[in-house]
Length: 267
Image 1 (cartoon, rainbow, N blue to C red):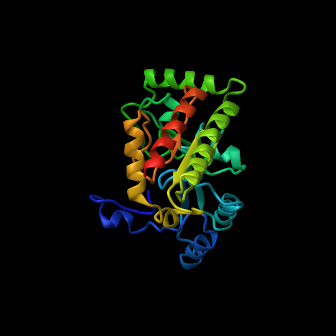
Image 2 (spheres, rainbow, N blue to C red; image 1 turned 90 degrees about the vertical axis):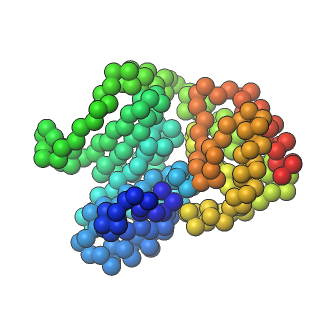
């Protein structure tokens, strides 16, 4: 998260073998492999960043990572906790046509209930108990309530037109926010992919966390508070992505944009 390999309470020894590179920077990744030959086990990333705000991959970035990891015998691990089933039924890997070696998924597969999952190549997954020596278990693994909710969620997402609807309302929201910001005199950039969107209070463009940090955080805080006062609950940080759902209506989007115009006009 935010390009940091650690956090308070995590021993330095745990993160001493973690290397970080800026998102959307293939040359930085190549440099790390060159500086650490045969030492990098894998590359882990959000294919579309959500934990620094909504940041999509530049053209060729994900494909480049796939090529670099294959050339160096390293795994490509896609954290699809946010993108899984949101930007396409097959997640970002379907959307961008890449095949990672491992994928992680979050509570989207439980219809919002607490659950997570991971999967990948057969030879890797065969290492997990009981088939292999790597022990893994969880108290809530396979919880019947979460699984029932998840199955129903996946059934609903497969209905024709649902992803087209999500893209339609999210594009209306994201484009509307940018237009309102422009009309009210605020520097802003952002966008959306299907049901995932974001808005930065900076002229942009934003390609990675360093770019995102140029945002006006005080302005975002005032914007967030103003929206909250009008009944619109957005993510509470400039560095978080937003999501729409099939429960959102055109009227909800119109109400959100009307509130945004009021707030941005007063910032």
